[in-house]
Structures are given as structure tokens and as C-alpha cells.
Length: 451
Ligand code: FAD
Image (cartoon, rainbow, N blue to C red; front, side, top):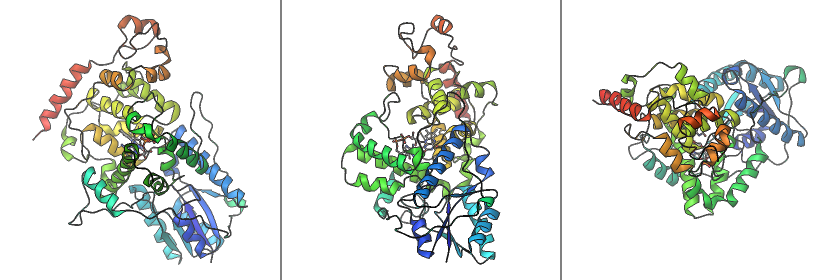
């Protein structure tokens, strides 16, 4: 009998267990539902990336003489209507473990069930599904290192083959919408999306994997893989990447595997504690004094803080939908500890602009930096944005790339800490706060909630 494959964050055809399960049932309807609950809050880079990933998936399906059926609306009604239209007895998905996805899928499951249609979950966006890795007493892990050890011991299956042959179904054109096209505002560019681009980038990264361990903290150097957006949309599965890494025994391969484990750890934490998408993982931090967001938040968002490494990061985010990990930590620390704003303000801005924006990695990356998360960096460790810039972008290449005012090396001999005259001359703002004073202020506020 016909089956529906409802794509969500698994926009690929290779190594796709749910697609394999669907095609074992009979002809498959490839379906995507444009859901306003997710599309609405997304900023231009995120929308453009998703649109271009859907276009790539559609193009792969067209090579197989079918197309992606895209419908717009509430998933509960839309998935049921699509399943009925093609006479499907089952709808197949890769399980979603986020708070919204879990609720949505339960509602869809109920509506389908009432119509005698089964919702079948096969696989997930992770090598090991959230909830599986437990300690000796059956509890989830609260810190990363023991989790990652148990995660590696748990292991995962190898990549699965793409279905061979099989036949496809389409919804009538009248019931579907075109794959959305998103015009990028001037000055914004996003990387190529889609399964082929993901595999190409991964192969290209494997060639330079050996430089990863040493270079990954240097935002001015192309040392990290930039696979996060491909992973976010499931254009490649981490299992595929882990299988390639298994054959390599270098320090860089080990470190890279551990970064993949962080992604899996945060998904596990969010699965067990869905409220931490909004609330403090360590509740005492909710009692701390924070400032009201206002002009300070806007200056941070727009990259006008007067701290070059912070502004460079915020501008990179707006221009490309991505920011280097080291700089994510620096700008997050600045928002929380120099501007005394709650991490949620920053996390929301990130989710709007990051093409790789992922609730688990983002919220817990923020909570970690803010001192209230798992394994949190101790609160008293406050990043000095100037020192961080000097250390990780020693030649200022990253700053000059993203802050064109500071690009002229002759005019600005020290881009990390330009003097007042230079700032005036090139039209770059003065530092919006005195870091030393705000650091002391942050520590004083923290002292007040320590027991
Ligand atoms: P690489 O260094 O090449 O790492 C390989 C892969 O490992 C990444 O693609 C990612 O999937 C995973 N990874 C690496 N570091 C982390 C980490 N600290 N936590 C979880 N997974 C990790 N990552 C996201 O994918 N989405 C987010 O929304 C997100 N928000 C973040 C917010 C803050 C405040 C911080 C500090 C980090 C955030 N991260 C997020 C983690 C990290 O910054 C990005 O995964 C990384 O910069 C992506 O670039 P890359 O693919 O070149 O990374």
C-alpha cells in the first residue's frame, strides 16, 4: 500500500532509514509541510537556506521522475489530508526530539490514528537517539564527559543504503504550493544547500581534517567543517560522517567526533528537560538581577558595541547565517556578563538568524556560556573580548573581514583595541561599556545568588 514520507529535518535521500521503511510499504509520496509555526520566526538567512535545501531535494526527486509535494498549513490537517489523498496506510518520519516537534508529532499521530493510518518513526537526526544513553542506574547523564564515553560505547549502526527502484507518488498540483523562493536582502549570502553540497563539503573537509584540532579556535582561518547547517537540516546524517571518521585515528578525528557528541549530548539534555529551551537549567540563575533589554540589545544585535571581535561576529551572523564557534562564545558572554541581559534574548536573536539554528545546541550553548548550563563554564570566568580577539585572531584578519572600517592596516595598527582618534577617523563606535567595571558588576550580581 502507498506510504507517505514526511520530510522535516531530514532533507536527503541517502542514508535515510525512514525512507527505506516507507518504500518497503509501497509507492512513496515525498511530502513537506510549510508550517507557519516554524517559518514565521525564521529570519531571511534561515528561510533562504531551507527554501534552497527544499529546491535541492526536489531536484533530486525530479531525477527520479517525481517531485517533492509541498503543502502549506497546519501539519495535523495537512499530513492527514495528504495521506488520504494517496490512500496511504502509513506515514513515515525520522523522529523529532525537540519540544515543538514532539508535541506536533503526537498531535499528528492522534489525527492519523483516528483515520486508521499509522505514524511510523524510524531513525532520528542523531547517531544515538536522545534518551538512549543512560548511566548505570538508568538515569540520563548531566555532564558531557561521562555521556560521551557512554555514547561511544553505545555505538550506532552504519549508514543504510538508499532504496533501489521503488515508485513514487505526487499530490495533484492544485493542492500543493511551489517550493518557496526567498530573495536575499543585499549583503546577505548563504552557502549552497542540499544533499550534494553537504557531501561535497564533507569530502573537502576530510582532506583538511588534520588541521582541525589546532585551527578550530581561529575564526580567521577556514579550519572548521561548516557542516552544522547541513546537519541541522539533515542533508547528511552524522552516522555517515562518523563512519568516515572511524577509519582515521588522528587527534583531529578524535576532537571532531567529540564535537558531534556535544550535538548529541545537548539533544539528550533537551529531550529530558524540554523546559530548558526557555528556562534556566540551574534555577538559581533565574534569581540573578538582569537589566532590561533596550538600546544595548540593539547595539549588540547590529554589531555596534565598539568591541571589534563582538561586532565582527554579530556582523558575520547577519551576513551569512553562521558564526564561528569561538566567536559565538565571546558574543554570548558579552551579552550576559558585560550587558547583564538574560541569555534568552541572545538565543532568540541567534535562532532567527542562524541557518544552523538548532534549539538544543543553541539554547544549551547559550546556557553554557551564561554559566547556568550543563558543565557550565564557572560564572566567574568572564571572557575579556579584547584579550580573546588578540589570542584567537592574532593578525586581526577576521576583524578586518567583517569590520571594513577597520580594514585599513595602515590607519588602524591595532584593530583589537583602536584608540579614540582612530575610531573617530574611521567611524567606528567607542566601546559601549567599560569591560573591567562590568566584569566586576557581573561578579557582584553573581555573589548575591551564591547561596
Ligand atoms: P565544527 O567545529 O566543524 O564542528 C562539527 C560539528 O560538531 C558541528 O557542525 C556541530 O554539529 C557539532 N558541534 C560543534 N561544536 C558544538 C557545540 N559546542 N555544541 C553542539 N554541537 C557542536 N551549533 C548548532 O549547530 N546550532 C546552533 O544553533 C548553535 N548555537 C550555538 C550558540 C552558542 C552560544 C554557542 C556557544 C554554540 C552554538 N553552537 C550551535 C555550537 C557551535 O558553535 C556550532 O555547531 C559550530 O560553530 C558550527 O560550525 P562548524 O560546523 O564549522 O563546526
